[in-house]
Image 1 (cartoon, helix red, strand yellow):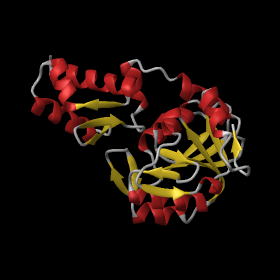
Image 2 (cartoon, rainbow, N blue to C red; image 1 turned 180 degrees about the vertical axis):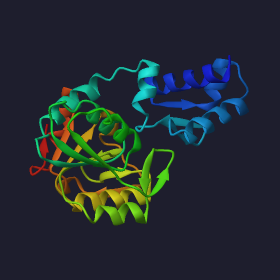
Image 3 (cartoon, one colour; image 1 turned 90 degrees about the vertical axis):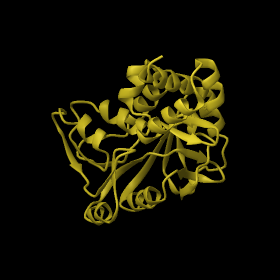
Image 4 (tube, one colour; image 1 turned 120 degrees about the horizontal axis):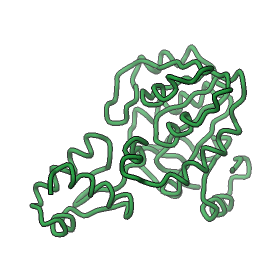
Length: 249
């Protein structure tokens, strides 16, 4: 099996099981352990998974283009995006950072909407290149290749000049006690700053992010205004969380 075929197989396996073992893959594909380890390292460098001891876990930032190429169903993200569309209004300034869900929401913005989108995500900005009525402001700064976003002091300095009506925050984990979390410290700080310049913070969370906890906390659940999730069983579970001030859609 060629390297590209192996790596596609690994990503497909992760999509189905969320976690893979290096030893198990090596045995199943009859390929050396070192070859599989190098495949995992390459895929992590592309931001397509997260390497852990003895294996890898699915990366919530898996780009939509990769999901499409792999034939991964996006019914859950589509349902979330349809709910999110109801929050967009003409004349708004909307702040959107990186992540698969935010990218898909941006791709589904109605063509009749007149708004300004501020983002530090290059893929998200590019997805709006042909939108007839949306003005796009791409924040500069150091380019973090793994997640295709800008970070750093320059990004933070630019944000001080803006005020947003809505902020769509990308996250990796959300938990009723541990709050909203992410894997990168500097990005967690930038997200807190983005919350500070927005009148309303929205988090769109797929099922894999519910009750997941990562290393760096952004904020507590009570600090956001709207949480959008799907499917119905996940939605019912989240509505039982003790946070009555958060709108749950």
